[in-house]
Image (cartoon, helix red, strand yellow):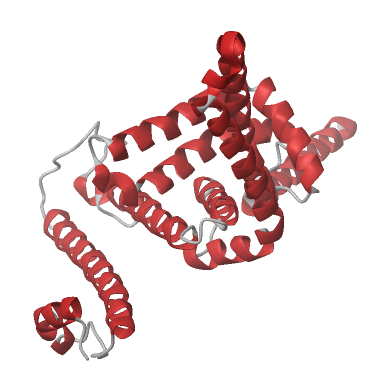
Length: 310
């Protein structure tokens, strides 16, 4: 027997099935799968629309002989440069698309709740590499980091979740402490704050360093206290995004994880590079430095030979 809700929706999606978005499943489970396929279909269509639009704008403006944006004749910025593949339009458009895709991946892989730790670790692995301009694909990098760090990240996430539940439960029932309620309430908020700033560094550290869980916890606590300003800014960023989702702008829920991941990764990587300066360096830059050093040595050797001849 056809489900009532499914019977109402079935007619509405007939046209979309003819367009190839759905497979035409006739069960509630199949309908749910069709809805998922339709969501991916809409995202792909929207991405194709943005690509086509940018291509049209690029072709129109690059054929113009008038320089719309210009600094000077020697090194000015033209509209052709702005809409080129290496220009600002393409750069920031790709960054925005990567942020939204990363958010959708985090939401999808966090649905079982227990996998939030592994999903967050994978998000930081991808975001830190994107900020370093390292080559790769978001989906494959995310899946690789999710699988390789699943055990360690899940253990840490469960520990953080249990501690958070205990602290929040204590805060909600603080009145049972009687005269000591004020002191205990302050202590619980302090513990919750320590747990929050510790989590700021712990999951990115799992994503980028190969170390045991105990060492991750120790190093995360040290960095979160040593770089307290970075920790507080990341916690406030997460709080503001959650507040916006719950009150003013629920639509940013689908972009908020990526926004936080990119913003927090930028600040956290600045801290990591203080301990590992060579982290995420481009191998091509290292080769260029070596070649430049060899050229300098050859130049000095020629100068010395000329001095000896004189």
